Length: 112
Length: 113
Image 1 (cartoon, each protein chain N blue to C red):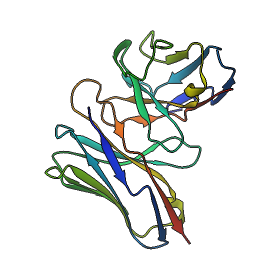
Image 2 (cartoon, rainbow over the protein chains, first blue to last red):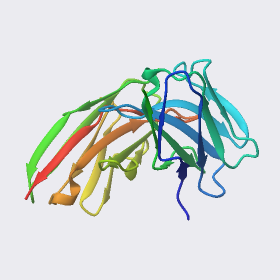
Image 3 (cartoon, rainbow over the protein chains, first blue to last red):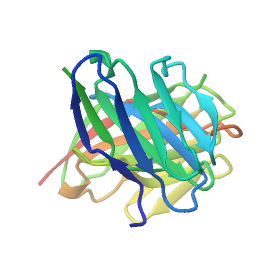
């Protein structure tokens, strides 16, 4: 598979639970981005990795959010103590140059 | 930080007509402007992009124009087809650092057969 993949595609959780999402970027893409998209809006930047280093985080990323990219390949995004406001589509994108970013299919999170 | 405004929010055209979507950006240092197409329930798909050293770029039925002085850029789709129906997002990126994309709010294009 040559595209960005994400798992799971859908997640329903109860408020207060922790959730973790995974992103597998395109092979050899050293840049990886997480975005969040709510209904009727464009994606909003959350965080950026170059190889294994997390180099930028948005103010949207509260202390309950943490992301890792341990070996510079796949990445995980964890949300602790989920809130209803966390319900959104979480998109991952990868790039070799920074400019051309290719998105995965997203993980749709519903917090009940 | 960068801010991107996109208009219109919805656009309905007849099959075969042209469609134009416009975006403005706030930071004159932005140098990369991609357009994404997102069908319902699908991932955003990069369809065309332009860099600040170019004024226009074409790819078959789609084209993008950039006016750096006015800080706006536009997507043009000619000979629209029903399969062009989707939400289109423009974005802008500053050079250096993460080169994260700042997106507009999207335009829902409907092409009526």
